[in-house]
Amino acid sequence: MKQTILLLVAFLGLVGFSKAQNSQWLNYNPSNSGISSDYVTSLAIEDPGTIWIGTGNGGLVKFDGTTWVIYNTSNSGLLSNWVYAITIDETCTKWVGTWNGGLAKFSGSNWTIFNTSNSELPSNIVYSIATNGNGTMWIGTSGGLAKFDGTNWTVFNTSNSDLPSNFITAITVFGGESMWIGTHNGGLAKFDGTNWTIFDTSNSGLPDNSVWTISSDINGSLWIGTSGGLSKLDGTNWTTYNNSNSGLPDNYVLTIDSDEDGSKWIGTYEGGVVKFDGNNWTSYNALNSGLPENYILSISIDENSTKWIATYGGGLAVFNENGIPLAVNENLLSENFGLVFPNPASDNINFELPLGMNISSFEILNIQGTIVKSQRISNNQNSVDVSNLPGGMYIIRIHTDHGLVVKKLIKR
Image (cartoon, rainbow, N blue to C red):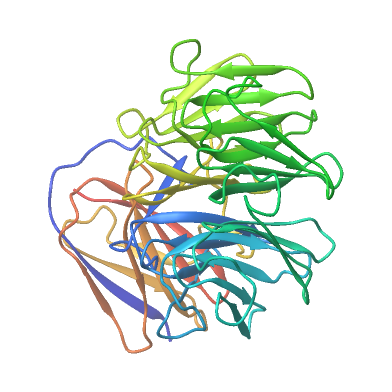
């Protein structure tokens, strides 16, 4: 028996095709995928090939390249659907910071919630989370900084330490065991476990006292994103980049990640994404690329150098200059597997696959690499309505229990 899907396609004019099946850009939003919100706030990559996505009022989403799983207040231990921070520790446990829902710990099967009622967490608004790799978690909240070793809590705030602000926006481990802490209106703090060193606009090259992101690179430099531009600290020297002296498109820098070549990928409030290789700036925005929105809250780069970009209002964008590879856990089958007919087509098309091959879902991509249709297939389903799609050429990716089948469709 052969499995057939009838696709009803609208008849419109033919347009040219310019991108291969592994297009540079993909965009996921609630209308074309299983993601729960257009407002993506945070990202964390779990090897191999799984990304965890925090959303605004859509809960926590897990995506393995094929399957979307949503965790929210209705079906999990989460106490809030607003997820601000995600960190994965050395045991692959997920730590999730929320707005007014405290801190959630998820083992993959069990949830543990820490909040101001059942722990020493200083606030239920958690903006940032980091681990030093030895089982200790550092949690940045709107009420101070917390250290948690699995049993004991230690809280640092402006009253009991030299922390310059209780509003903790970013945390990273850098230079051995030192914690670098970004604050809102308090600048940057370094804490080595005993001593505090504060960097602000009055005593350093920091361009603004609101620090939104901190990232270290392979050369031993620290990169700090602020409301006033981007700063690089190489140990003693500060270099500041802004929209007046560089190709930075917006001074409000919200996220930074580095690729395998050492280039920095920088997300901004209104200027989209910019790549900086140390000499040249390359800007990607909603006008000149496949980026759906210029408000960028998080960027994570995976082992394939694919950039996962959290946009606030445009969903999740995915970008790779060399073409987006297949999901790492999915096998690409020969294009000789199965048939798409008639092709070219004017209205209906059929997918016909070999005996014993079952389809779980499919995606249709336009020539910009955007997924325009994504749907799961039930056992008794034999037709899908895509009559709202314009005519032209498409790539159809069919997910089966044997792997991925990729076909081109010409619509006349």
